[in-house]
Length: 383
Image 1: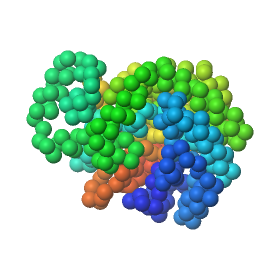
Image 2: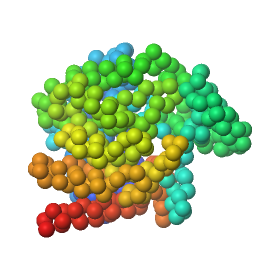
Image 3: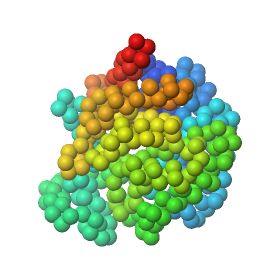
């Protein structure tokens, strides 16, 4: 399970009681681009091991925005990235997750969407997002990115909102901005977006390939497996390019980055938000280079809106994915680390303040369901 460090409302004890054997975490206190020293890595690892758990996967070793734009001090940040990878490997942490999403790591329009059971979940709605983009953020030219009818629908929705509802939508949409917590002004966000004004999807894709080909020799030397997380959501947003959303994006990555150490964090939640993604076909096609697995599901509608479903429901196809991965591990004699991703806020956690999607009980429920599927699949393989 994912753990955010000592300030996480979900403790290591909670995670161990849930049945997990290890955690994925990161050194969130170190500024993006700075070197992760062995001393800091060891300190975090000792804390985790003292709780009876292991730390084998980093989530995430963040990529500096200069690297994505390939300007500024990007060469320095790339060299630092190599040193951090080497330090992690020296401490037996050899799966490194990262993403290449510009500015925003993820986007949702509602962080406490009520499900039919009364539990709360994360949701992304296009009407709400267009409202934020066009009428709250007021990104120049934003309305040109959407159908005229959708902009009109968003305007009507915006006019129905109270000031408190507008602020809530704003905070929700900007939660994926690292370090935001409501501190960023719309002017600051627009400035960050403007830095990508001349970078097309093709250029960003080439920047990713260049970055990976530069760090691949270090990864190979130290036995590090690089696992890129897909875009979340897997659509172009705020005028920003998206380059890890589809089968075609993965195919292009592997054609342009031949190193086997460059692979995937296969997130069934992110990929399932697109109707044109066939998750089972994709993982069968690229399974050899899947180094980390996020298991969650989304329930999407015909308009592309989606909310986080229960793990075994929705469009994630979790049972088939677990069944295939179990067989793949057996055939290749390797273990692919996996974790339940996100979870509904439910029961006692409804009264707690936790990181969106990462309350304890909802993820415990997801982990229990996944372990049950895994045990059943394993038993069938034996028989």
